[in-house]
Image (tube, rainbow, N blue to C red; front, side):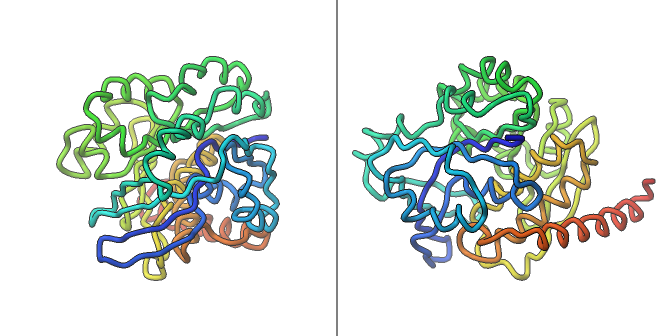
Length: 313
């Protein structure tokens, strides 16, 4: 497979900052898959689940032509998480099955090195991780790179790592060892100690590592080679639920980066994917070739317009 997405499979209940709720929706890293799928069918989701996986996710996989080969059936039941949202868009999650389930099965639910190397080869171009900096999979990074010598590694840094000052140095070290990373504006302020978007952009530039930088409903940046390419968000007025938009757009950013697209084109494609993701609760229901052609045409038009506006040839 050209693209490997690693992460958790979850059912979600959401508690929003305004007091509203949504329950029983597909969640977890399937949102990242929904960021690659609009532009490439060559994607495999490497995840862990229970024997009830097909009951909840089977129809979605079949409608979208996704292979279940990457599903590791190592849990007694598929994880079910409750997400509590803050007003700034940050969220915290915990198990609906209680603390005892997390304590007993939390480690088993994590992605392991051999899960990834099993599906990696010379054709693999990109591998996405949202694993915490202290998860064991990172100890196997050299092994993963050996199995997929042409792949670029995208790390979407988990919020719980950003919020933990004890691992700040470890985050910095891992950023150096991946090819591209992703974080949002509030996370950047916590990690870099910045107070404005502009300060965060400069801090990212100073690291000299490609970064997909998300700034909420305003849009996103692709920051690489000392430049910050910005594209405004798409379809905000039609948004129903923003859950997973960061994962989704980061999945697209991995695709664009690995395909060698212009950074601005990558951001535009990412924003279009996120707009689809926000149209409903859960990931976008079904991707088609017609939709792909429509998105690519929109991206071409927007790219030309933004380049003209910036007087860039």
